[in-house]
Amino acid sequence: MPIDPAHLARSLGALDTLDVERGLARTLQQVLRSAKTLLDADRAGLLLVDRAGALRWASASDRVVEAVAGGLDRLAQGPCVIAFAQRAPVAVRDISAEPGWRALAQVCIDEGISAALSVPVQVGGGPVGTLDIYVAVPKEWDDSEAAALQAYAGLVASLLAAAVTARVKGRLADQLQGALEHRLLIEQAVEVLIDREGMDGQAAFEWLRTAARSSGYEVVEVAREVLGGVSLQSDRLAQAKARRHDATDREVAVQRRDSDRHEGAAQRYERRGDPARAQTERLQAAAARGRITDADAERHRADQEP
Image 1 (tube, one colour):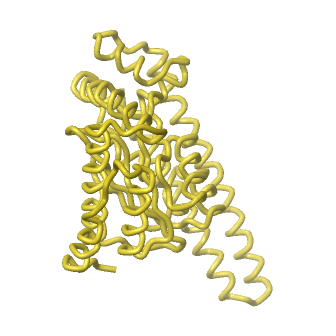
Image 2 (image 1 turned 180 degrees about the horizontal axis):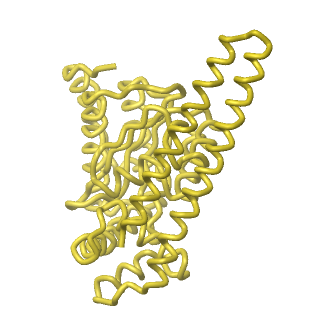
C-alpha cells in the first residue's frame, strides 16, 4: 500500500521525544512498533553485524523475528544479507518463490512469514545492520514503502549514534559498539575484493563469510588478511565456489523431483477425468521447471566468479 508522505511525517514526528539515555532497548522497540504500524507489517526487527560477519537480531517486535534471524544467520542468505552487502533496499514478494532459498523459505513458512522488506542501517558512512519488516502473505512492495522504511532506518541510525555519544551501557550498546568496530574492516576488505578480484559487493561479502567458516577464522581476521595484501588462497576460493555449486545442485535436484511429481499427478488426474486439477498440477510443474532455470543461471553466475 503506498505510503502518504504526510502520514509518514506524522508517524516520525510522534517519535521526536525519544531519548536513548532512558533505555536503548525500549527506545528501539518504540521505533519498531511505529514502523510496523505505518507499513501494516506483521513483524519488524533490527539486525546488527558481529565479529563473524553475521547479522544478528538486536531488537525485534517478537520472538518470531528472533527465530527467523537465527535462520538468516545460519543459512547466510535472505533479503537482509543482500541489503547489507549492497547498501540498498531489498523487497521480496514471496520468499518461497526465490531460487536457492528453499531452506530459508521453510524457516519463514514455519514462522508464518511470506514476504519481507529490508533496508541498510548506516552509521558513520557505512552499514552496521539492517531494519526489516515481514508480512504473513505474499506482498507487492512499492517504492513509497521502501522509502518509508529507509526513513525509519535513518531514525534508528541517529538513535544508535546518540547511544554511542552518550556512552549508553547494556547488551544492545555492546552489540552496537562491536558492529561499529568491525564494520569498517569488513567494508574495506569488500572494496579490495571488488577492485582486485572483480567480485561484486554481495559476492565479496559472501566470500569473506565462507572463507572464514571454512578456515575457522572470524570474518574480521580474514578481512585483515585481505587488507594486508595476502593473496587469496586458491583452496579457499575453490571451496567457496564448490559450496555455492553444491547448494545449487541440491536445489535443482529438489525442483526436478517436484516437477516430476506434479507432472505425474497431472497425468493421474487426466486419467480420472479431472482436467481442472490436472491443469493446476501442470502449472506447479512449470513453476518448478522455472526455478530450475533460475538455479542453473545462478550456478553459471557463480562459476564465472573468481
